[in-house]
Image 1 (cartoon, rainbow, N blue to C red):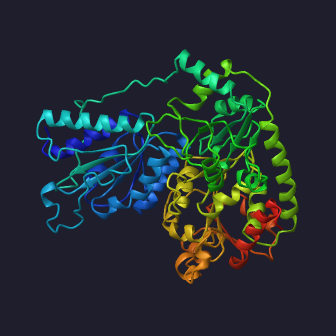
Image 2: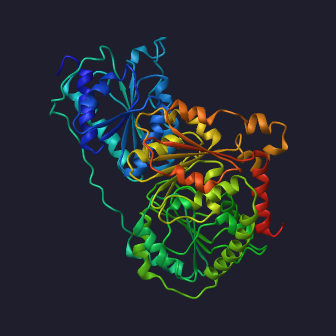
Image 3: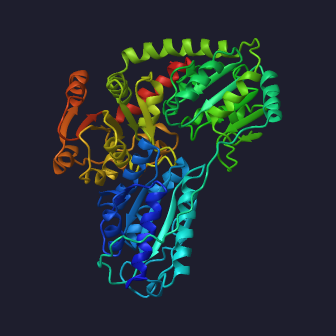
Length: 563
């Protein structure tokens, strides 16, 4: 054992993490985490990045995982710094993203003793991580080190086992904190897990196929998914069945098959007799669905059977009709099921196709005469995305407006829909863009942008990042959803109207800046915005807050034939 046994504990943890495939670490500064900083930055297989603000650091790491689909470690000091990891870990939990939060802590005897930055950190994130462990404070013998190694391996492997997700490792450390110990330990023990893909028994496949073949109205509804070419090809084949209609949102990243991408547009065009469109069999894949209208439709017109296909143990019954939880990857399920399916006659797919054709005609007529507004700004933005680029959509209005306009199949779409909060979208996009060589655009509302402005305080902020701020003077979502506009508190307490200077924010961080409003030429400005720059670029688009909601509400009235 070394002179500082708790530091040898850190060396073991560093070696185990890197051997289990965690090679990227986002570190926020501090003193109590000095042993962690010294150990990880010195390890030859660890690549470390410094991000000052812990909340931004968490989302930056989340974006890195989204890009590479590999775990990333988060390291911070003790006390309130640890709490600031909370929002990103909650988002990671619901998106099933493997973040490894490693928090330094004070010695246990100092907790609640009026010591600085000493708070109760055990199980701090218990509702938002798959598991957490509290490492031995002083591993003063080989048995304690063995125990530490087992805890560390187990916690990391839980993060990497489907369904993946975040975990927490809490590390009590006592002074001295800055003594450096050479990482020459060879006696740590790493435990590996062999992971195999689950398969379905033939009898189960035959049973599912019988249900499918007896259904004349089959709806496949897709939520948030990372790009999955094999799944896309399989759904392309299934979408050709007359009995199948596939409803897909932008964040599903599915484009090859016959998908109905404009869910809200279709539901508002649907005639009074909705029984022809309600499914007998509903199959859901992916994470959260944005559209509230499809949730209401399926809850009010329940299918006879609802299969949810996902590697999970949670019985998530969003539509209150779940009959089967199929815990295999969707591509495995559809590939195995396809040979058993009959391609029987049905009018179901044709009905949805006709509905989409009708909705498209109304959309074109309305969009052609719509005044300058959020609606018009999004039309311009989504039409001018660079080929083969990435789009990150902020929550509230951006992710919803994007569902109304055509997708670009060369673009990948992402949004923080795990918790659907407005915090962290700039940082998430920055983390993704940092590891990606394509143009990455993030569209954010003004409140979201200012809320995550510390995401710009990042020396890793990449030059391929393009930040669009829709400045409609507050949270315009509250003029769209029913309720807030009927109170006297709309402007001050719901929208929270403000006049923070976007240009000043960009200049503070040394970023390039462009501006667009109703007097501008959007295409000309977007062309400059997407040219090569040596730093990240901010584009502020100003729209009339008092008009935006009327334009959108009239759009849906037009679809319903009420205008």
